[in-house]
Length: 240
Image 1: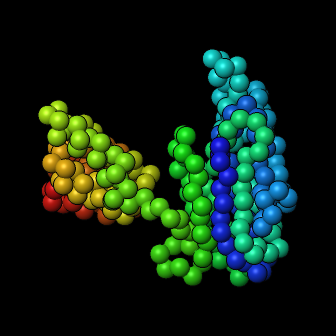
Image 2: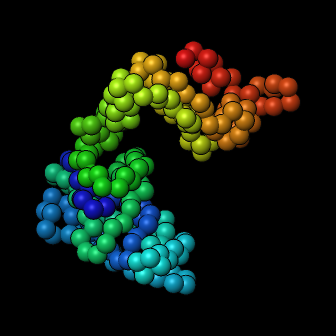
């Protein structure tokens, strides 16, 4: 939240806008405005410190003499109508992170979007359309296989072409990531590395990232020599 989150939407009936605050550094003010960016309809001040508070974890940074506490706190803001856009902005103080945003419509439908914070990157404008079969929240940039290639593979291909040995030393997805999402992301990565001619090593073979005993709650495991085998993940890896 060093740049505003803007959601373009047309919602003629009352709805609830939800936002979950993650970490707050030093102090911040979070504002929500609708259609008129300079006229917030809601704001909340944050001032992390020692001891008990609205935060879940106290984090003191002695090198800067400030607190960067973890809040994990959700706010629900009722909004009567939106003709053009919802704007979420950190207007005062240092930085903060948002971990989730969502809308609950008048008909009871709930839409939410997990937010992956990246330091130094501006937030993209989102479009909200609950009727879109591709997903209610869309932006002009899709974080897909091509995005992975451009951002994380192409620079290493250039180095490889210059004669430097390159391989993916370790990679994987933690067991709290949904299994179907994990497999689709893994296949995008594997296709890119195959295209680039890069070898790879999975972290890990057995454990929370691996094909054995990963502890995922959404996998139909196969018994294999006293271990729980994720057959889908194994066969995906074998194809590449």
